[in-house]
Image (cartoon, rainbow over all chains, first blue to last red; front, top):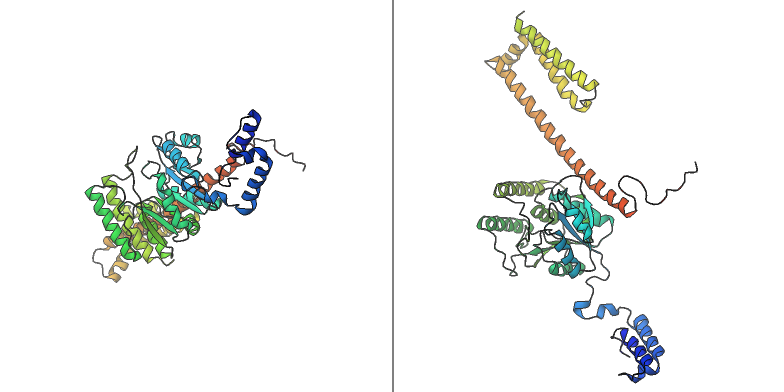
Length: 294
Length: 129
């Protein structure tokens, strides 16, 4: 009996008996029924969690947690199919929802064709509202963990497990994938780098905890976070503000190192003109959030 | 009575009439009409009683009475703009929630096998009422 072997072992024995060839295992040949019985007893009573003890690369990521991948998408037809396919390959147990924020191209059709649930806004509402729709969906379906992944392909799906793990283990309410913790070789332009360092310092000072990558949109949220985000989520450029809001609400924030790819297609939503607005808006939002009573 | 005063009276009455007409036709919600009615009445009072503006300006110590008029008009327009910004922000939030809800509802309908024109794919249960 090989309890860790696959059921195909007994299949072999039957084939051998039918063809009359002497096989490798005399015992299986003698009593295939008894072999089945042993396997049944083993998997049912002795080790019902056998799937947990499979080799590491075959083990399903999540046994008891419901995991949702939220992909906000606005005109991302060039990359969306590849991103979904990659997620399905690396995190097969996760459900994928694409929130289509009024795209004018084939984003919605391609995403549905790749096997994702597609939620389409009637018209463009902006990234904040798009993410929130995803979180509202996650809450209504009772998901335990929601992971934000960009549709442009810069967030590597093989690193989703890293983000999800601390949330699963209850070590954090939200886990942010940071590009600046030694992994990968992400090099932003000088201006962008300055802005990122500034916000990192500011948010770290407010939160009283080191946050190296405040603008990263590669995040995993636990159940409490999903609940909160579906009631309140910042409107545009939400990443930095969300951290401050979560801190004020007493959620625990954690960072894990990730490496991000260059965007595979499309173009960044942040142009030089908009980056000034970005700075002012986020600063103002943080100030307002700190002043607000609840 | 100066010609200008007559024109001012006609103008203020016309403004008042417009506001009332807009409310009557449902183009202006009563909630937002209060400010406009008050301003129309104020303009009417100023144009009918010629010495009123001079008296108020004198009381406040303003040497050139028309500047009081400009000040009041400016403050009024500022306040009404602020009010509109608040209203637009509230509308924005409601609008967002509405679209999000419709999006999720559409998905629930699709899951239930109902297409977006509202027709069920299966035969609807017969109404025995």
